[in-house]
Amino acid sequence: MGIFDTHAHYYKDDFGEDLETLLADLPCRNVERVLAIGCDLPSSEEEIALAAKYDYIYAAVGVHPEHAANLPDNWESRLEELLKCEKVVALGEIGLDNHYPEPPKDVQRGVFVKQLEIAKRLDKTVIIHSREAMGDTLELLKEYKPRGVMHCFSGSVESMREVVKLGMYIGFTGALTFKNSLKARAVCAETPIDRLLLETDCPYMAPVPHRGERSDSSMIQYTAAVMAEIKGVSTEEMIETARRNGERLFFGEELK
Ligand SMILES: [Zn+2]
Image 1 (cartoon, rainbow, N blue to C red):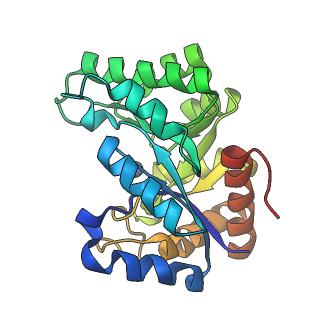
Image 2: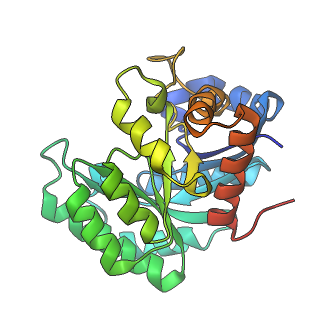
């Protein structure tokens, strides 16, 4: 049993013509399962199409905070329709991002809250993006208590503990392998091993020794090796544990 990449963005705009070749090849490179994640309605539809084509791909649909402005009037009902498509296992990625001034905070918050409400109503797992917005994110997570993951976790050990207490999972990308990732490594060391997820966030966040290149799900082996060292287990064991964690969260049970 191989890698479960719980956070990938496979968009034609980023990968170009060789996207299909890459996706056809990933299962030969120890990639067992991929959760392909949308960041707006069109990219969510793109990931649903990939899930329909490839057995090992599942989809998540949602509106990323960077895309929270200028949504069509019917975006909520469109999103609900997409959530009912086959192989859509989560609502994401959604959240708050204060790294750039746009879209304004209140616009991001409004769209995030609406999606937390939809997740509650339809009983969907959520994938949370939170950058430079931990306080506000935690406040909303405590209010809505969704089932889900804080993806590419960048908070403190204290915030991680609050997230874990809410029953949520903690995801780490290739950024964990960067030399300056001392904070993330410290948080990873303190996170219960049964709450850790492996992610690429591809095409971004390629792990060392591929930093700066376009990443894909097979590169998770490098992130897994660093995570394994932090947790004091073998790389195979870490890949296996993270895969089972992801299956528990997104499929409700461990698949055989
Ligand atoms: Zn992402």
